[in-house]
Length: 186
Image (cartoon, rainbow, N blue to C red; front, side, top):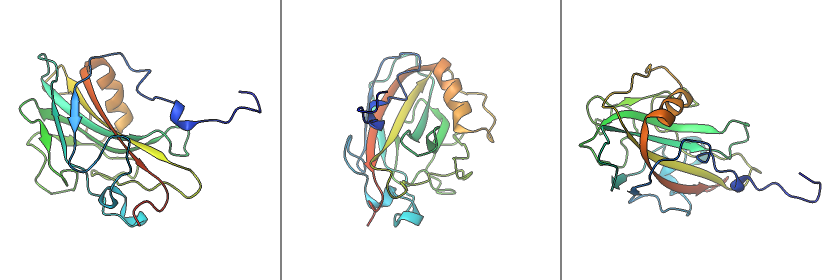
């Protein structure tokens, strides 16, 4: 990169290195693709409520046996991004998660679904919290259509381990990206 070229963090697509699979549709009552997140989806330390958004999906491949849902911020100033949420072994019959399903003990996740510890080591949705001066961050919500009913991933694994497994077991992906920046929940 020459000294005259500014780095654009949004030019990096973290999904581009994954094995290509067909896309399908994910929508939300709480997140609009390419628009700022609502205050509820920010972290408590940033004035929000750490509430996972509603997600609904359709048009997934016929060979789908289960789903996984992840939320990743590739723009976190870590060099490795920041995982906010990772849930897998969602039965094929479930095509929607209500607002707040990522809260511990909410009872809103289907039986058998597993939530992995996120970067804060919490088994819940961890809301947006971009540090001051780091610009606009992307919060990439992905619904992964999976070719097996049960992924054998240790429940104490990191979301990165799940993502590695999903690269080989995903038969489709649906992507919804919300935006956030410092002070966005206020």
